[in-house]
Length: 193
Image 1 (cartoon, rainbow, N blue to C red):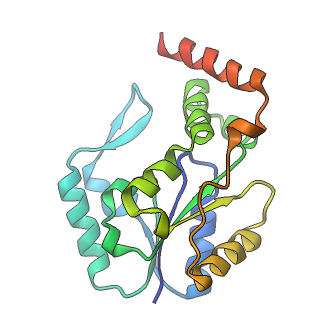
Image 2 (cartoon, rainbow, N blue to C red):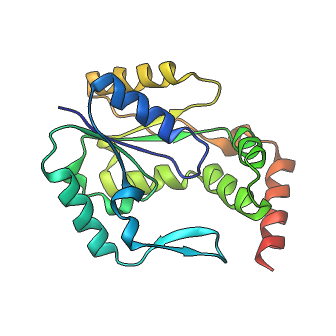
């Protein structure tokens, strides 16, 4: 039995690709939380994102979808909707913010959404939330920068088999150029006005 939650704050870090590979390797169902809670999603054109209209009902839909399954891989950023008892491990994918920025720009994302998501990665919002929700003992943080899907999967499986959580290994603030960070801050100010 395997019950993995694959997450990472911004789109572009590889969540779906990695989750799909785990689903294939373990021959188990891949759960896209957005599909499960689709009736409860509403588009916010100002923020350019979906939001959940009823979190309690969303949790119920997710619980119902998972209740009859022994094994599954969950792909979502909405980890606050997943009950801790439903997973064995939360895998948090991280990506160098400069690479993330390049990917999101290549996908023609609006500049302000790019900045917002890159800053979320810089500060590690997905890791922080995962630790708050599931505890350090259930979280495996992975720097995906420059790694193949197979390398990422091997890294995670090695830690899962050893029962070895790992987090706090990525600190983009120590690695990034100060000019890059100042530029992001200025652009965020411009987006806010």
